[in-house]
Image (cartoon, rainbow, N blue to C red; front, top):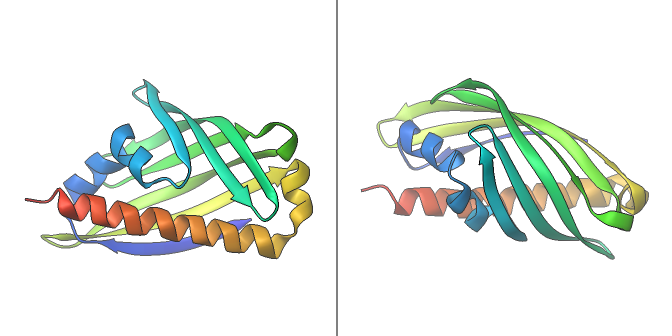
Length: 150
């Protein structure tokens, strides 16, 4: 599955970069996130509960940040397992571009693979769920980052 999009975040680039690297802020924005902790400066562990069609599962996983170019871009690679529901793994290239003093364009390109029961649900359901979750994340993220701008 591949997904590309961009969002305009109403905040300066440095604030957006800081929020993208703040586990507490990310936890508030990730749909179904139960926990998100920094294991090291470039690694986070997470527990997320998701429902995709008839399948509901708790995923435990690890996210690694690489190709860091603060405050412009990085690559996120992660993998998670939801027991019998299956697994998900993939990565995303994230790029921040200032559009004005108080607005930043966040562009992302995602490439992910799934397996197990989740893979049996069909591409359309998986794609629509992924797009819905991404939309929920970015609406929450934009609101959170914008509200912290002074």
